[in-house]
Image (cartoon, rainbow, N blue to C red):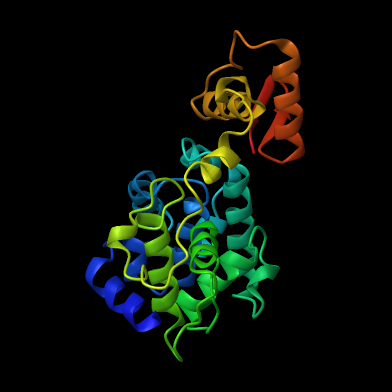
Length: 252
């Protein structure tokens, strides 16, 4: 089954810029950017980022304010802070043996960077891979020495074929012997079982408006209820994304 998966990946793999490098810094940047952000949005931002900051040392030498300004539009700005902090650790001390010791690096990111950059034989389980394994009814293991290819293949299959909604089972190389998705409606019901909060009503939306405004040199956004704005400001201050100045607030 794994051999079939790897052959499928060799034929169907997308040409993504972070797949053309084994540089751990570039791979870490891609993994952080790809967290909860679509590939199509990440590609141009990743390429611009690597051109501007090609090494961990280059990023570490940049003020956090500039890093946050470059991150606007990617969402979840705390990821930019953790990436900047990780770059500072690497620039100062080198890459740690235990990658999870870096700020913002959890088990999945450590396994991804470890396999793609350091040829470690570790399985990287992101959301797509966990869903794929659940539908298969078992976990798969990489062949000896091929963890990087295996991880890319499972991620690719989960992202493009074995999707959460409307999986394309007829195109799946592992369809023989697969348990398949849950009965129609059950997976959707798990997602839509309760009314969702509109994004514009969320605290994350207010935080994004504040960060984007400060990055553009604009005042705090108007038309937002004072208590919502204050809650967002306090959270941004607590997370180190903004700071108080004599005239108000600034990034970092």
